Amino acid sequence: MGKGLCQYPANKIRVKFASTDLVKENFITKFFEGIWEVKEENGALRLYEADIKEITDPDYIWFYE
Image 1 (cartoon, rainbow, N blue to C red):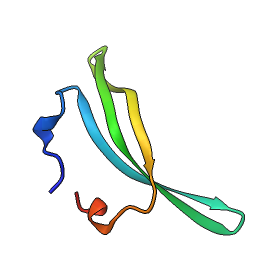
Image 2 (cartoon, helix red, strand yellow):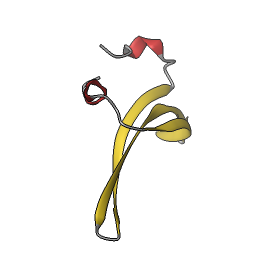
Image 3 (tube, rainbow, N blue to C red):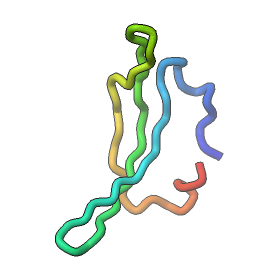
Image 4 (cartoon, one colour):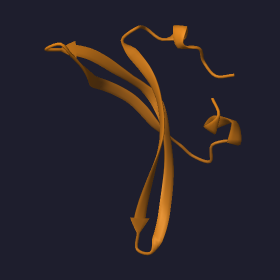
C-alpha cells in the first residue's frame, strides 16, 4: 500500500491528479503527484508551496494508492 498519512507533517498533504487537454483534435492526459503545503490565513486553510512532478506512464497501482 502507499505511504500512510502519518508520514507527512501536519501542514503538508500528498496530492495525485490528472490533467486532460485537447490539443488539435487529440486528448492528451498527463499525471502528477507530489506534496502541497497548507497554511492557515485569516481563519481559512490555503494551498501554499508545492513540490509536484509529472509522472510518465504510471503503473496501474499508482491509481489505487
